[in-house]
Length: 133
Length: 504
Image (cartoon, rainbow over all chains, first blue to last red; front, side, top):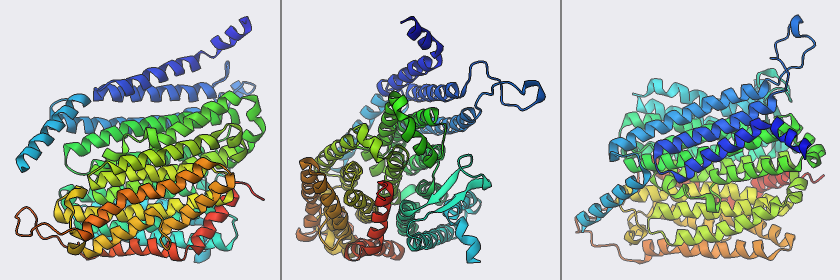
């Protein structure tokens, strides 16, 4: 039992990732505020970044720079960190695009609450159909 | 000359559209040049894909491999065009060429201005390039990057119309799709953690020998990948974003989104399941049963939802949900007939759904009517458009001599081979349901009198212009052609199925 706890505590980055992931997913799925949804997505992505980077880390390892000073050392795997640079770039572009859409929606409806937008839209649709008949 | 081109073909079909996409904005003011470039790239891409398929066909399955930057696998990123890759490349290039011909017609009118339609083409080519990349990539993280390029360009296309509803649909799509790709990225992370490889073949080899040591991580990876691609490919309960996104997009975009983008995700899912996890592991983790069940539910639920829509494009969008069900169901059959049928069905649905969306787009552009109930007598006003729509519908229902039939036939054979009742019944019931939501449109169009033309509200609609007619004729011809002579494509699908299932 003690050993198990030790292992669990050793792997704390994964717990942090799991908690972050759930916070993010909950925010995305339950909030109707567009900005909060976007923040939720970003939190979720951070959780995955953390999983990758933690997976490549080795306790006591050093940065993989080949030199005489650290010739005998254990190197940390640099690939997951490099992949996550790509992941962060993707995440930034998604965020930028989503913010642009939010600006457009705010201009059109004057609010960034999804429920409020849906209400406004149905009102407009009702007006349209009244206008036609 | 040809000898130097052959090894570079897999990368050429990906790079050409991407390159032109980034060059395009410099000509944004010369619309004719932009359109000519887009169509030129389309033709070049199609010829390249055709040549590549013929090479793969002649080589009996030994794939063309290209190592990016000269770095060999497992270190470098590998592009591999085997049977599956060649098949999907043909589908992508074969469908996107007629769609770009169609877009030439009235895109500016639909998205609101020339400036905007130039931007539309940029996204369109990005999407085409990324989809071609999905066909040939053999690297896990590369899949993620391509998935994101497809997602972002799709969202851009959805928001192309200058209307707040388009922005809203695009935002919903973006959030759901990013949720999906985050899950996919997580799944890739888990696979990398236990195998240490990003190349699909190396990861698969490693996974086959060590999965018993960490079954929980394999579970995590599988569920992340399944749900991730499930959201992106709109597998039934995860489809909520699709109808809004696909019905508010401009018609050429709807055609590409429903016809190709969804298929791209399904091809990626297929590659993960068969090339990385392998069919043995799929059985071990009951993934095959999950897929059959999810597919069956999607077919029935999607069809019923489609039946209840009065707006034509929404009906077609929900129909996509049902048709995705067929492909997902086929992925779980795990036999040669079933998988070959799935691949053929994937190809034929890409063509059929594009035909239907483009015909619907032409009708909506000409009449301004969006609802099925308002389309009485349209068949006599726009004979060619409605003929294309009818051919597409017959294909989707799966009448003999149309392409959908061949795919459904093999799916049915595969279902019978598994000896299970559920897929067999659902495959047949799905066709009947499909007829119930498409045939009323045709009946109304041909057999009901058109409303009084003196009414000011109803301007006399006509078939669209030349390039749009050409696009509809081409696509409808492919639907019939694949139904009458399925030979080469079916053979490619069968070989891909044999390769994926690791039969000899």
